Image (tube, one colour):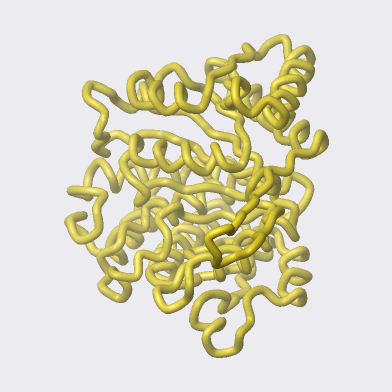
Length: 352
């Protein structure tokens, strides 16, 4: 019995979560496992009504769950940063979800903007440190609002945080079992303190993994090669800020945020899984948003929970609907409605 916290969130979040839960129900019946869903109304509407973002009582409840399934956070009537910091970042920090895991895989039938690239060329994973760096909020203002204003934002990197992220990446690369190459994405020629430590720890840990080829590339080179030669990458490990940026680029080469899913992982605790597309408020209620990423997030959740066969069933069903039924990955041009995509994936799972 899995206890799954469901946070549909804002905008189109509830619509895509609905389709992800169809896939979960279908695969649970097929594979014979049970689960309990606990719904939470976190997001912009709750904040505007009550002023609540993420109460400590809910954090305590999350700690007792097997996983968290998130739709989207972001409301057009709430100032940017309030919900993101007050809910998403707080959740990652409080639950110590220190890994952001982003598979980057081009599905057959999905268009990529990269000329002459195919699914065999775009199949890698980014492991992003998720609780340190510039996102800790360390810093402040001096003489704010004046001509002499100073703004300071500090990147916090601890040996513990860096090492556990790098070790996770090496272990993941070994388990993935493909090229067995792990690339550290940094900027050691400029960030001579933080990334000096990253590089030293990376080199030290690499000596314990003789079967994994260690690799290094500056973040600017990563961005160029991800476009020109994505087939060079197997697993990439990087810090919080660079990981945030390169995974958005990666989403575009795999066909867009409509197919990109990610996990915020605590290997020793509760993890959270979500689509990368955001709340997309302009599409709310139209039943035209692409739910593939949200369904792929269910696939990731099942894999992390140890239900590998179930995860494979969901992955295969996603591939079938993309290849056989959908005309496009963009909202309003799929050839199917949001709910029809979810229905067909659930059907494919049931028929497997």
